Length: 169
Image (cartoon, rainbow, N blue to C red; front, side, top):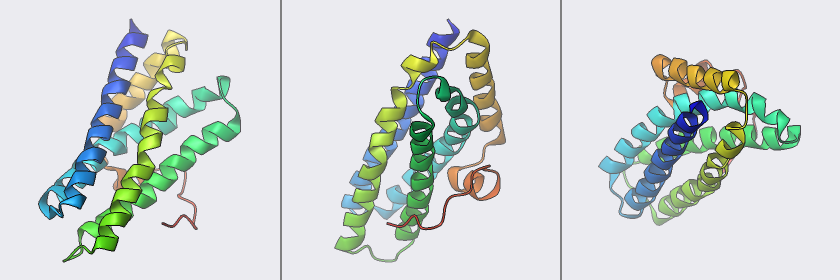
């Protein structure tokens, strides 16, 4: 039962992120600056706690299933998403979005999408973990949500892993 609860929550969070990424693509394409800012805020609010509990409680357990290199790749995807989120915020603050800005934003958003689908698939492995480890993941999720830091605030102030220099778009 606990595994089903976790899978349902995890999948729903990935659906939220997917839907926000798709909405952002559309908002950038139509240069809808109000929705761009709104969707970026929503995405940061959803992604902050989600990334946090993934990194603090789920990813360490993945070493039972994957190589260290693959787990590091997942963490690297988060590094990239954080850098990209900051770039999207910068773009959203521009007075006028150029065609190049739109193309860049869409490319960034599409670059994040594979992590969302790949990460969602992790639930079929996580559900095989002992109940106490699944409960720890759910507890970590609750703590992250209670803390309520958006993605950028968490990354800049509380994330244990610094974003490496040199990630550029």
